[in-house]
Length: 144
Image (cartoon, rainbow, N blue to C red; front, side):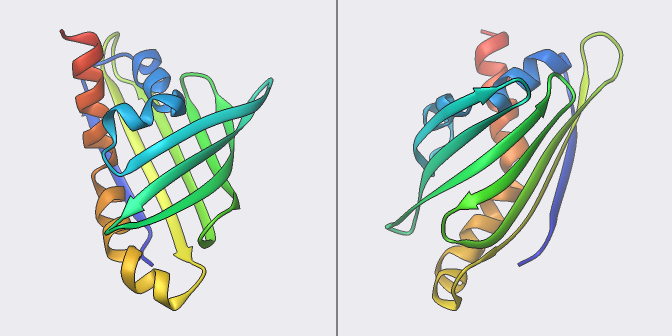
């Protein structure tokens, strides 16, 4: 699968954007393909996360170890799920007092050719739209 890199300059602080991305348990509220999400095993700079996602009627669950640098970076590493591998990062760069350059990177490959064929194109499209979804969430939380 392709490596996807997306960045966008957003009119929110790094803390506002970081807080939205790190709030994994709220993903089902604003990511339509995310049916369930939970977080556990919090430590100083990391936590475990689990998400259930649906693609074309197929539901998959995967777990990640998320390593954080508050207001700067979130690194997501696959622990289990339908992927052969998945790595992802979010970077938050302050631009002035109330703007942030958000960078999202993801690289993944499904564990089987069947899953790759069925879910690969949808997951690729969803990945390309991630920053847009989080921008809309920030508008909902901070501009209403």
